[in-house]
Image (cartoon, rainbow, N blue to C red; front, side, top):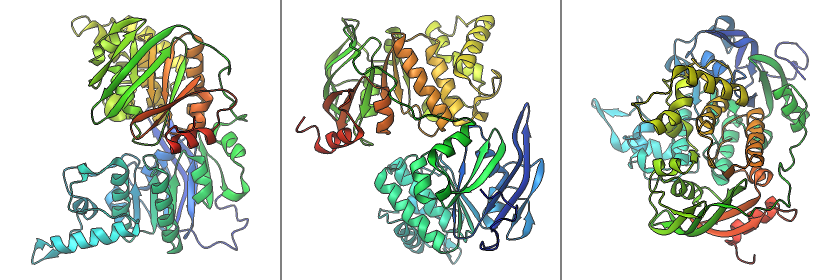
Length: 513
């Protein structure tokens, strides 16, 4: 291992483009960064690794001027800098693309790419030149689309690529990519990596933040690891095994997780039954049974209909066809309130848009669903709130364990736990989890997976959706496979079911099974 500035192995390395030394940052009651070092070399992809809450986002915000450092220095090409904000950092050659796409959906693709840098002619925007420039930038990402179309008409994955195109339009010496692949499919990730390699060849230093370890090992030359706001070390990627990386990130050795359920467990008490349920334009009619204590996995590519099924079962969307039963009795689940009355809970894949209210505290967010079941004229007594919230903060290990902390100040993994706590307070019979571990670190992911297994062992049914097939296999008793918005196969999760079998089933549309 080579730590920044220790002098070993430096003779063969070029001078860093960026050097951060002894960075410290405190927030009320929290030390977010404590003496952190980071160096970025030209022509390298450098991964910033650590669990949620390790300090990765805070370090980036200190670098780009969102937060002022309480200690330490930043040097850009040997010159000491302290940016007043992201715009000043960008003007100095540090460009950032965040996980949450921060663009203007009401403007066109071209306007978003060149906003603030529009080509002009005689004092007016030269729309022809702007569209041509936007098209050229997107072609560098191997993306062809109508740049005059509104951004709102594009998928989230395309919006992410538009944000990256905007970032590379400046004379960037440092490009920061914060979870850029979280909404991209495999083909789009491959496109992005090709672009990253070209930018690397041009001498740009790329700081890459991702929770996808396979992607980190595919693209990163070296990595810096943080834990609890402190520097663990800097390593060449090729010299650090994945198992060792995980151990350094979480501070303990982590054995490979095996499937968390017995392969031969049987279920004979149906809880929720959907017969011929479908929604025109969303998902073809399907039949599905979830038993008490059963974890049912939904597997399929992005856009295959997984979320659409979840929304129908929760009443967030209305079914066009079919009928449903809960506990053996016919049930009309046409609204979320009706589903909640039947003890069905739903954690959406987009926790920020559909799950959390960022300006409320952890306590207020956790108590929301319980309060909704009582109506706003019967507030939950504060003593009961404190008891319930305290219990679930402890049970789910929400950090920091401060119920009055604004939820927006929590890491992604801890925000996800807040959403889970909200629904667990209601003691649901069926818990629908749509991508509950997306964008969170290995440690938080493991905790949530173990929680799902424990809830199932306690008799709760779980509908589990994940793009990671290994995760679906690890948790599920059976797997429902979707393709092209159709349920094409139901597979028991026994020793014969592997990720290869799942992928073959998805690719074949269930034919041959």
